[in-house]
Length: 295
Image (tube, rainbow, N blue to C red):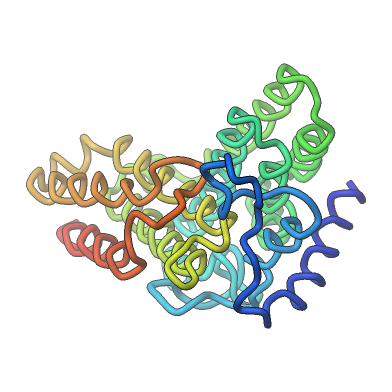
């Protein structure tokens, strides 16, 4: 997968040069493209996409500290999983991977394969290294090969059937990984809530990082945050019975705030102007956490 790695690291190097230019021109120049300021294509956009994951730490906001996956490393998405039970932190890392792949699928479906490849690459380059030791200690088969094949096929523009087959192989591997967490643990509302909080705090940080001077300047960060919020919503829905049984009113308040929160990401391609400010997103995340404190 050398081509993908070269792309990523060239992008990171270029982003360092771009980062000092706060008045850089919008990334897409097509006047008839409704997402002109937000879209990605070409070498400059490769650098821009990498920039979002090379800023050296978690932006100011709700997220925690630590590396991808919450144990070890510096900065990154997994920091919000520090300080929680190991099983929840492990399952949370799997959800981060699912969030990236979810957005990748959306972009492929939208015909934006060049944009999608970054979201297929990020799990392998950023999250998997922190998971590797955990997978080994839990005696879970590794799935780096499956992630690599999927990213390669997307980059190559392979037929949809091949990509779907590779995606299914990754999904199966992720299912096997999370299956080692005891069912009684996964059934606890507090377990689901810990993962949701990590996903939502990370999404709030990524969303804030995406916005500069009132516009979505970093589409990859916007898309990452979209994927994480959707994963959190899925978890909330899947655990609905457990939440309702313990406190139906708190569950209703969580779902109401989640509905409002999801409106910040109306489409996988960022709107020309943010629907919400980072402060509004953070406030809704806080509302979900407050309602969740009942569990």
